[in-house]
Image (cartoon, rainbow, N blue to C red; front, side, top):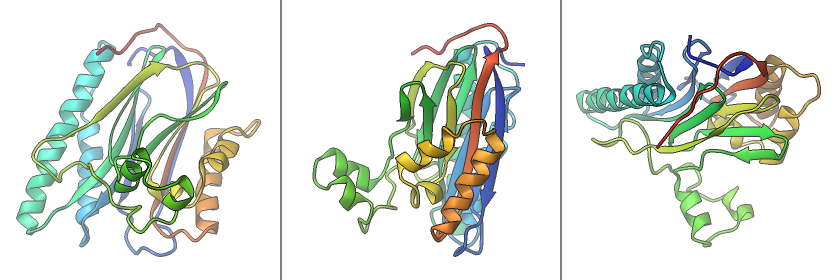
Length: 253
């Protein structure tokens, strides 16, 4: 088992939503290896389902890492391999398929996040809610450039256009963040089927519910997205960090 300084309460769920016929989202949760992920496929004609499934299948082969850098190296290698596999699938199908991915790694008292696309990682701590990942999307670029406001971004015509994904180009461009995890932290990995309907302050309210376990938080979030229309597949993966469980480690670089 990967060294872990915190015991975990984990629950993930996915729903096709109220509009789509096919669920192209997938999630992966393995407390033994310390790897958790959400992938949101795209491509049509089941291409998106194949892409997100290829990512999850690849992550399932990681095994037990010996150090935090070893764990991150294994995950990156699997994602690079999945990128090549998905690219080949697209070429064989005569089109482009791909998938977003956001991965949370836990080793000792440290966590790392790797991502491509607009699936997100949030962290609720004593300092409040923080969005750990930053969307690789056209609308985020416009926000960063000061060209539109947050209010405009919520209804912007290109808000679903992403600028990075797994499988859409020969090389995979991942973003990375690492930090320390503490008892009491709550992590949320999710697809844009959730964030398209719930604002960050609403998500924070679910994560902060007193006495709520990971399952009730996850089911509440999905239920809220469906109540708002469920216009896309919606996937959530909730991790509550509980008491001490073992030795500490760390990510570097």
